[in-house]
Length: 162
Picture 1 (cartoon, rainbow, N blue to C red):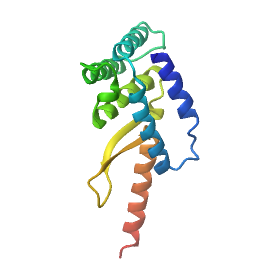
Picture 2 (picture 1 turned 90 degrees about the horizontal axis):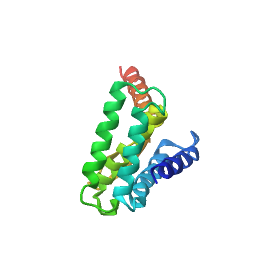
Picture 3 (picture 1 turned 45 degrees about the vertical axis):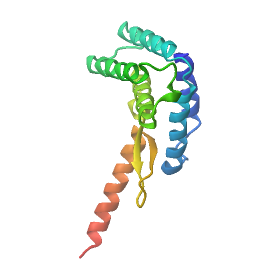
């Protein structure tokens, strides 16, 4: 199942090219994060497959993985175990827990694939004028682009002020 989830995630991500605007991409990726959690029908099977993936990573079957990344894999694994403890599936998790579960899975996938920039990170954010939170899911590279754009716009605005 874990491999199927990785393959399905890869196919979904391949379909979201750079032509998508970051804002619309965020809504699509947030739906994917929730869909991922909803698709986990057996927490025990998922955790077993994650264990097997981590064992393969330690054995070097995914290439050379640094000691720091192996520690990050272990932390992500422990996060998944903690979140799924006592649950048969992820459907009963709270929204923040589903997001944390998705982020942990994305971290594992990014380390195994050696694709940190393509890792999706979801955060709960509240828009201006509302207390209702929504999931904001972007890849690491999209978050960096957003930060660079905001920095450029701020500098541009500061130069225009006398």
